[in-house]
Image (cartoon, rainbow, N blue to C red; front, side, top):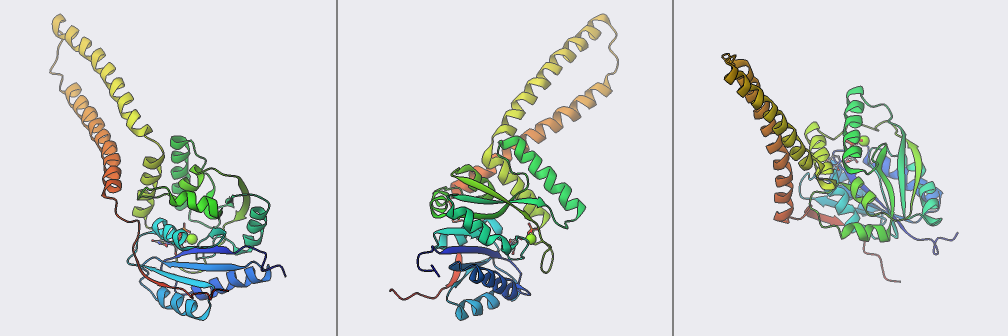
Length: 316
Ligand code: UDP
Ligand code: MG
């Protein structure tokens, strides 16, 4: 075995209410790595779970020196949990995957091989979206379609299942934004990239932990982080409205002068409605960016850890 020569891989897993299966799932991941003789450490980030996830992770970390358990002080969301994992991971490469085994751990040896062949970012691309609800699939399609168009970064079928070289992790740690979008950040940094396909497996247990509110907020973060196109749209919209206003204005004046002017209530109401709604939408879009600036300028930490359990390795 060439274990001593091989570099260590950190596997970062965000965990939120996965208590029922986390022990089994992670044991499976560990077993696969051992079989492929990949030296690894597992960084389990408990994102303020309300079930027994933390107890499970805790005892796992105490039993196995390769497992590090991190507890965030509350539920921050998957993105901050990933950041916490990346900050703590010490490996020469970091693999990020979901706790529910929807990212098939069988792919880990292939990812490591691609990395050893020189790739600095190894990205998982979904070959199919697994058994997701039709409504979910529709939302995902809409979401990515919007982001692809707006940002020019290909997000389609991209996933958070990735291997990042230490260099890439350090580069991402330098990105100071508070509201993060992992996929966008890992695309933005560049580096030597290779892809592999994987089939999204079925969730081991329980339902998706993403609420609709969180998904929408992620979509907004994704768009506002990578493009200011919506702001330009407002300006363009304003000009179009102005043009319409001039034409309508001339017509109205002509009608008035020629003596055809009617009560004109319909036009007034229609115009009021249209302009009113346009202004509201525009203000809302500006508001989104303002909110983002506000959140960033507060400069609060992305997450807070309440506990870290890790075996201190003896210095050899
Ligand atoms: N997750 C998290 N915090 C949250 C929601 C989810 O850490 O607030 C974790 C969850 O435990 C899982 C991963 O993020 O490991 C993906 O979540 P899920 O499977 O619910 O999302 P989906 O597969 O539907 O994208
Ligand atoms: Mg999942």
